Length: 338
Image 1 (tube, rainbow, N blue to C red):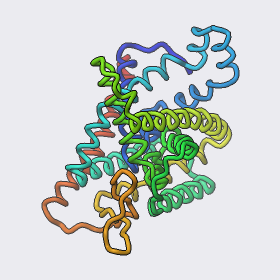
Image 2 (image 1 turned 90 degrees about the horizontal axis):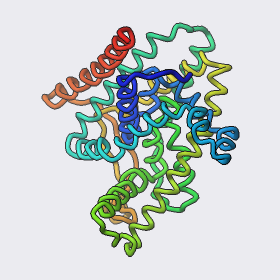
Image 3 (image 1 turned 45 degrees about the vertical axis):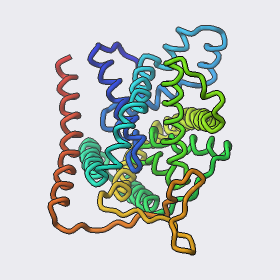
Image 4 (image 1 turned 60 degrees about the vertical axis):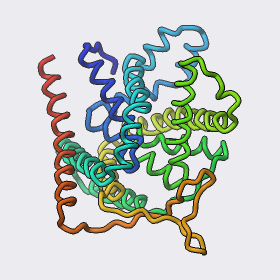
């Protein structure tokens, strides 16, 4: 699956990585959907699958160039570069936007998922009895997950490692939002906000020659949590890729129809009009976790009244659909001209 890439191809790969990174940060949105719609999902799974015994053998024997070529390094490195950049830039912007313009942000992502569903459905032509059943099962699973209640935070390192394995599934399984799963596991703020901010602050201090973080016990704990979470994510990424590669090879149509269903079901997670319900103590006060964050109990979804804010949100939904279809059109046009 490796091929020679032009400068434009390489730039697009970094941008796709930015998109995957941003999508993985938002609860209800899956980085795998970006890979699926952008047309590099199978190459992504294939490349990750190449991280196996042979690859480690090449690495241990010092054959670094052979290792890099074997795992489709040019493709993965550009993609992950975009994800890393996204993690420390776009994700910060998203945190701000969700905090101040929550309804409109969810509306854009809701529209983007609708656009993704249309694009994927349009290109899938193998509809039959089995694939329709797979579609329905995928929808039911997606909807069921969206109505589960979140657990409380747990910073046990073994649990953090497990969170990493589970949450990274959003990159390999379109429609399965890893960040939303972290909310259900109770560790979204710990792993995708606090620990990432700790790394960002530490990198900024080291860049200026300030190493005082070494004496900061809480910072060290956060960095340790992030390291374990990252290790779990890498473990999950490689493991899931092997399983999905096997399934795609033998049951491609059923797998793709299930994915379409799962993405449809995930619309319940990103429904823009919802109210966050927090856990309440017997005395009527909102329960807080160990760092003073409100503990989420569930989300109450509702049909909005037809007011100006609702019309604006609908406009953003249309914008989200347009963004996806425009990106697909632009990339297809670019392929035809190269």
